[in-house]
Image (cartoon, rainbow, N blue to C red; front, side):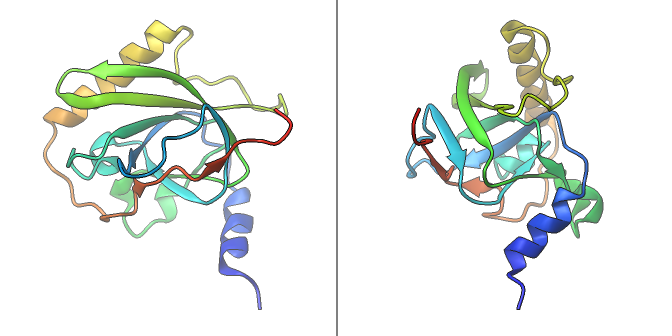
Length: 168
């Protein structure tokens, strides 16, 4: 019998890369994401910080700079979740932290690395760290002023399961 996770990964591998900014709520009791790490599980993230934070209910926000995520919102039972899947085996590094008025603690920004050097250049991130910070701040501030949304509790908030790559 086929492993359901393998089948899911095979199916989403056929979708185009998502090259943009998403968010994931981070379980504050979990171990902090490593400075450099390889993700070991399928993770849900959202283009909407309100969804990812469960309406800013207290979980810190991770900002994910995706290169090869997969936008599955078109196929989702809840397309309003704006879900983008982070695939296992992708390598991420801590890039910076961002202060957004009205949100505590600071947002931790993680960048997906292009180890194959084949991914297209990101278009949503901006060309400088200052542009990235301004974009993230604007997205989160807009979400803060939006109406609460219905969310799948626990889907977008959790640990960041990553291992430090061997030999680095």
